[in-house]
Length: 382
Image 1: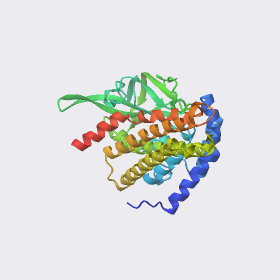
Image 2: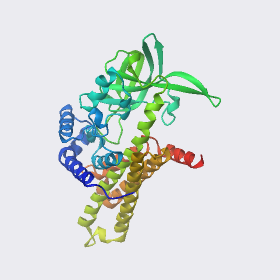
Image 3: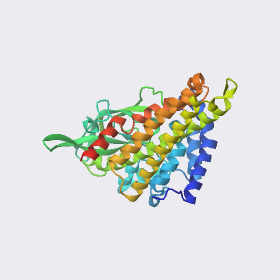
Image 4: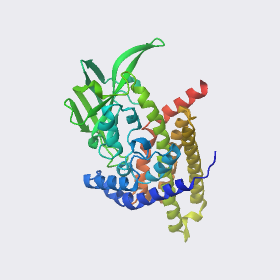
């Protein structure tokens, strides 16, 4: 592997870094305190991201997206994540599974998402089905030309401002190795469809302003033309997106960790105790050295995994390794940043406690650390 970035990639990184510094970071503290992003600010960020050419950078060029390779996408994610999800979510990355759209779905869902006219949300997780996604209980029963959905979802990110949900529901069961399995179908359900209720979920300490929601379906009727992909093959459209998403979460973690290190370095140089900068003491300098080493390792693992994705040779276990190592590295780095800052590291007048709070979710969403270890071990033992 050639570890040297191309000139285009270096220019891309610099452009995104400048965008984050100018358009996103100035709003972070206010958004965190308010636990909300105003519709006006959201529209402003979306418009500027479109103008800068960053919007839908994860989507293929043939549908109007950025058409970037996975390595370049990971580099962008690394830079965007230096500000909270509440803000950089509006530099939208539509769900890649929308590429399964066909016929009228292309003009109704895929293209509007790429062009910034609509946004989607991914509705899979349920109260009784978190890590065990196959245990979902939401059902969609065929009635004539429609599917009737009953059930509920929770922890659905930004469903409050999404125009439609990609809802996963059981449509049949089958036997596999003597066990009953669910055949799952993905359905496109528009906001405002009768029988679907969206409600704000519990407040999360991580990424204030980036909310999760609960979705309830009570005889929610959608046309069979809203099936995304094929009936009973919902996992086929979901899994490719979920696996790639874990690599991008790893890149997010690297960016957050780098920001924590940068803040710690500045503090260690400026803060004086016993007549010296605290960075001159081994108790602090060794922490900085360990943080930098761990971040570099996480970054190299993440970028190598993204590169393998571009080569078509990445495995689920490798994606799991990147997500596992980068998210746990972020947790360690954020904790050490608090320790270096001392009491000020826990005050909400600075960004360190926000990074510390935000870091905790990364070991849970997109597959917990325990699930990643299971995937890795299963692949090793296969």
